[in-house]
Image (cartoon, rainbow, N blue to C red; front, side, top):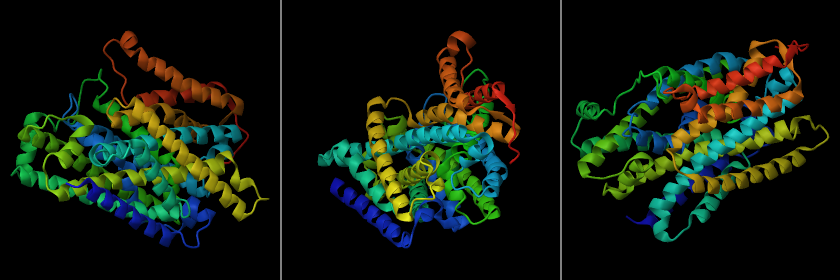
Length: 488
């Protein structure tokens, strides 16, 4: 297999993305970048969001989890929670965003709780999405370096710089208007790669679906529900945690909602969300099925590999046909870039609108605002690069677990702020909000660090997000008073 050939295919893939970006960004302006001129088709957004939600971490880490101790299809418990959470997003949060005609969803916090709370919420999103997106991006760069570019003597640092430069090239003009289309293309490639890999591996092992399922059951790979309430993978913890992760990582996330509110009306946006959540359920199940297949294949061929390395090693180093290697590589790239490009666009939008107050500055021209946006866009690309280098130094755990841990700590305060605004009619003095939002994750970290000493056999799992949000909510309530604002 030629590393140069694989690299050429990756370059060709980016040329296609740049072509789409050039076509879709014609006559674009700041509104095109931020919300696609509110003219996106709901079915297009729904399909493209699959790639954004799954990401390269799902593509690599979810199959890798299946054969690990006390895992199996355990991750699907969280996916069931995701599915439930999307209904809350569709029928509770989206109506609020459309009612207020928001460009940045965090503007809701300003209208309800004041400017300091608004900027605190936006800042927590910026921190969380930056860490999450760069973790996903790091994983792909790591795989490309290890299995393709290392043989050509191309270092990790050069790979990271080039990939970020390419992402900048196809997002800096069109923003959401471009990403809606590029995400659709990339989701198509990712799902095709996934299905082709599943079908070929079953064929190569001379098994049909029934035989494959029986073999996975015999190995314990298909175990779904875990009933020990003391452990972190207890099914109720996972389902509840998954639901709240969706509410926060989708419904309270500017990247995800930026695409949803680019749809012209609420009804179509809700159709987008519901159709998307059913498709995502199926896609995650296929990823877990692929994981079981990979472990069966590794056992049959005597390949000693587990965790995040199992899919890359089997696809690129086990002697499978070249078209499977190609499918893996294109699928991996297609899985990561919808999350990286969307995050870069959303972070630029949030910083410009929420932190710099671009929408409020009526004394600036369109050209001046565009200049500011481009500077911010490049700034975040640099931050992405630094974070990728940091993750390379601290890479130890399964990256899907690392991603969920980051979400638990950073999205908890954001969830509490929105819940406080929606569920109460009280007001909190702005100056105490940042202190409360920092105190709660710190208390949760201490709680998690001493769980064995304080709770004996009980292990805190995905409910950490709920604990974090509850602590923040209670502290907000403690320092609150009756609100004068009757907006909502």
